[in-house]
Amino acid sequence: MKKIAAAFAALAIFAGSTVVHAGVVVTEQEVIDQGNGQPVTRNRTVMIQGNKQKMVTDRAQVVTDLDNGKMYLLNPEKKQYVEMPFPPQGPMAQMMAQRMSTLSFKKTGGPSKTISGYSCEQYSGAGAMMGNQYSVNGCFSTKAPGARDFDAFQKTMAAKVKGTPMAMQGEVPDGVPMQLDSTTKITNFSMPGMSPEQSAKLKAMLANRPPVVSKTTVMQIASKDLPADTFTVPAGFTKQEMPSGPMGGGMGAHMSGGGMSGNMGSHMGTGAPAPAPSQKIPE
Image (cartoon, rainbow, N blue to C red; front, top):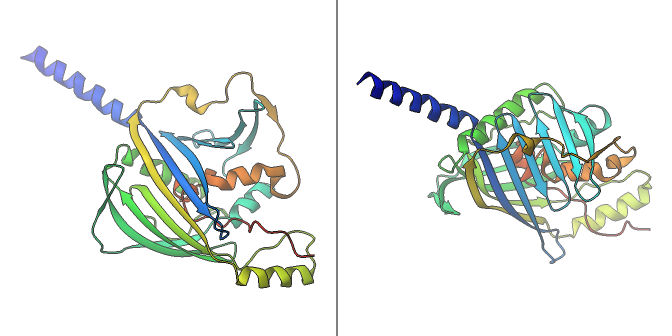
């Protein structure tokens, strides 16, 4: 009996440690219509284990290591990477802070839905980003695999950025956002060097432009142990300095694509984007 009890105790310890160190892999699909009737589909995979996250998009990869206070922007095509402190500092922090939003969700009271096989509760929210107003309808699941690990990372990230310009205001539901539908009316957009006349013309154009509509859906979600090298810079990658200039020479665009999904941490990575209008600047 003592041996059996010891075996069960060892099994319980092993099972407990497995849960603590388990990771979660979320595969999402985002469809964005910027108001031109030509929707664009983007795929994104978010991997979380402990205090580390890796986001893989069609264009780039972003690794966030909260334990070491580092963020890595990877370019697999060129085998290059940029290392940044987390929370970001300097111009990158200012750029990312502009894309943080005030967003508060409330439970709609509507019936639960099933997304990709998992039950989720419906919430609605509204907020502002870069001077543009948007609304969000989301379905959050605490039943999906890895939901606790997902939540734990979000809360740790929120604690890391507390007191910085990147701190998000508002309440976010517990669980994984299995689906997020957002509508953004872009009325505020500017670029360095724009004249007052150009700004006025652009504002008039935006006033008549349909809203940006985004729909993000979790296609697959799984809880599994991830190798440690998932969250490290691959061998053979060359370190680069952060490019200077607006948006970090394009690096900032990759970041705002979901690195701080927002964050809501990863949530805003799947959240309500406020992309620039795909129009020429008026002469």
